[in-house]
Image (cartoon, rainbow, N blue to C red; front, side, top):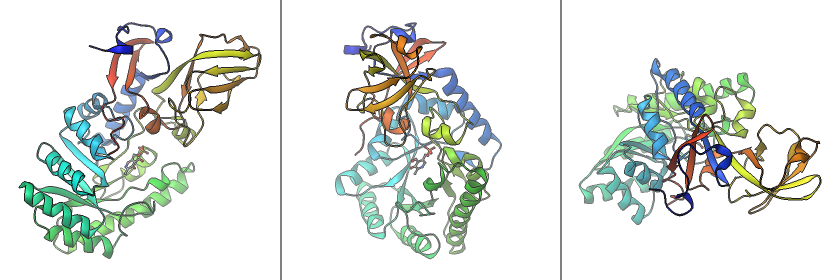
Length: 370
Ligand SMILES: Cc1ncc(COP(=O)(O)O)c(C=O)c1O
């Protein structure tokens, strides 16, 4: 039963009758994206473990798992708890978990899911070990390796091997492998350049896994890759899992550099003002669509161009006679520059098929940043 603002919405409602701003999912396109990625990995040694930071929605996660994904990745512990509550059993948290309160939640989550978490610090490994011993559980650990993004992660080679040694000797921690995300390469437009650099990064990750194994420490999982590198990293010998996320809904930033997947997630808005001949204002500002990577793009109206985005207003220039036909109350559809940060702003996704509302999905992982 949908409550409040959603109670009047019924399946079969035409897209343009939905209240706005609304995050729309074209279910046919989304399912085609999920299937295309699943087919790519079906005959590969590597598996697909899609990242939930993109859509944060257990309903979509279950579709990805049904299509063959080996589990999911989450960025935040809260996101992982939301996935577990939504029935997802196999979760890798690609983020360091620190502090007593979170570590207690982490060991509790490990008691109800197959959980893996990344570590890049020996002190943190010690804290996780102590909490796991107290709780009488075991935590699966991946050593986080920096393969060029310069975010989290110890350096490849001896620093990572040394941390693997510490983890493997820590009570109630089980070293399951390593994780090295080449995030700095996802948006590289030139395919040859991206391939070369991604392969160099993967060489560092895979050779680190081999060095860990030479110490007699098992290192089964070697996890990496995103949407921009899925068919480079996913094909690299020794990589066992790929963490692609954005391929499901896509966004304008990714579409600039690749066309393997189509945009399935858009924002429906309403024209709320036409006070000037060459300007319109849409009812979706930064609280409904993110602008961190790339400005929003307008669907199917080349004469409408983004002028400015404020909290709750998106002001557009109307540069031709077609676009100047827009009237207050008309609907305009946008593609977000970055859907990871846009979905996060929405409590529900409106799933359409053939332009009609089919279902409303809750974004249970939204706001779960702790
Ligand atoms: C650690 C990690 N893995 C995987 C991904 C997914 O990448 P993409 O959204 O490019 O598919 C991200 C995205 O930022 C990430 O931070």
